[in-house]
Length: 237
Length: 73
Image 1 (spheres, rainbow over the protein chains, first blue to last red):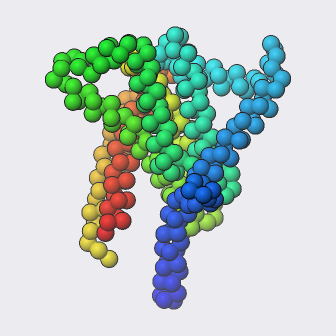
Image 2: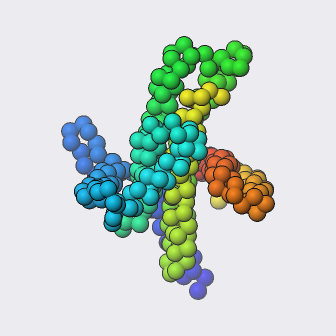
Image 3: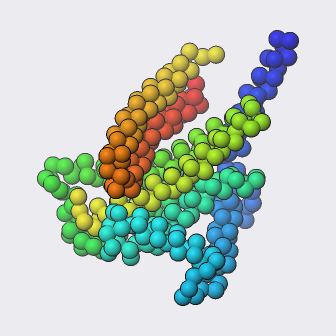
């Protein structure tokens, strides 16, 4: 009795170790020196899905919205309310940045529910790429808004002694964005998988329902922080 | 079994406790504020979400450190 239990326990521990390997990216195709990892393939699948959905929804646009167009307009209103909170009505020119970030991240986070799909956000490379792109864009927007001299000047505010602190602050921003999104998604997927191995029946369902909430909140937080950074870049501290 | 695993357990448990307490405080004051002023609820909610994300991030950073420590052991 005791030995049988021990054998089952060891098997479960081995399976939990395998989950980690399963969530890691691995090579699927190779074109000469270019390696296509599973993360890139999954991202392509999501991009194709998004293109298809948006094409189908915007095929027949009319003055009086009906069908899918109504849904798109509700989503657009949500983006406007997100931007108006941080940047005001003038900030609506940044809709392409914020809207794309939110849509892309929420689709990647919720792609967990497509069977066989591993969300690209459980790979630190995806989140790092998103965060670095966002922060680089914020710097470009700051230079465009304040001019190059004004941009350099804001590093010396309020006094020149705080220059190192301001530089560190700018460097930490992409790091914290990366780690926040990656850790939330990876920890949540790990927890669900381990629970699924231990108790396969019914117990993972509420945790997966929580995963829907977590995925949407993380997408919201990422775009909200992008709006906040844009607001500090355009208005100063 | 290595004694170092205790270090990993402490490294994930202490920040989790701290972050749970601080999140509880933040949420309780936010719910209080929402009950007093229901018309300001949406602004309070978005502020609360941002604050919770920052507190959550600290636990997740320490989780990452704990994970790296596990591989070292």
